[in-house]
Image 1 (tube, one colour):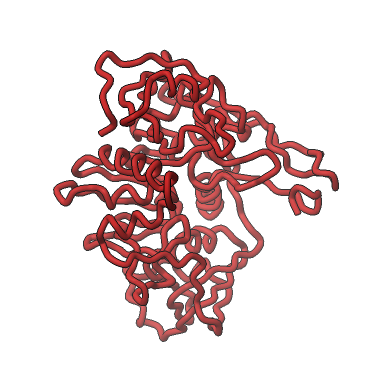
Image 2: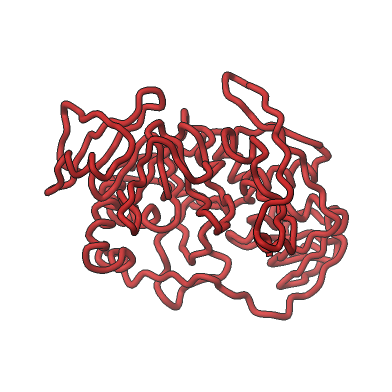
Length: 395
């Protein structure tokens, strides 16, 4: 509908959307954020509407930019809605709401930023049945409460047959593809350090913890509002209120915590997350990342623009196959797809090798896969790179 001109659509980074709603609910008209600096969000090159042939008719407005602590930030206006329709586990007759497990997500922040908030509650309870400290959304924000009459659904059933690495490997594909991806995932697992807080993208990044030894304790964070993600559930134990940002069923480790998406992205932008591992469509020689759009296809930004917005405090690692399905390089002099972030990727792990990224001087090949030559990597890499004097086999 967007590409055919039927609707006008403003794409917004997920964390920015959460904060725009949070500010709208607090009476704050605008704020500055580091997310999306250097992208089409900043420059105003994002089409808002198209004609019937897919030609852009209207573009977004360029953002005001100000520098704080040496870093550019974009001005974003808050959002206040006419209506919000949200889901709660429990609600009482005063409108106080309690969300269950990871089902807080955007429910709390949306419920706070609308003139009329309508709550669909699984359970409507008497006053006092929700203890004061368990109220996630105070009733002052709520206009209507209705009883839910439909069962909860799960969009992506994701199971683990056991906690062993062998069961995880089934998610990597088959044949040569499986071996390439396994090499990438095993190497990515070496980047986890004891005590880290880490955020993992869907796909290969989510599989890396299975290759981490028991001596390494890492807390996994997910943008929908959880710290302490556990493995995928055994079939039959899945819970519709326990999902990750990729909508996959998950479990929680002992000591986990859950919260709203606005708080989740706040800890991301502020650099509380030590490590972020993401997939990519393209990476440039100076660490620019393109991961959200292919020509003619719109995926939306998701949370990646927020995840890469503080590279001085959050190490950003890209895991991807070295070339695309047509054999074309994915490590380029300059990204040709719209950017997710500029100068943000610190390490690139592919099936052929590992590159360190210096935002000023470029790429250094520090590891090479067994059976691969430097000449082969050069032939499949558009961006120039230097070879480390201490080049070694991939760990």
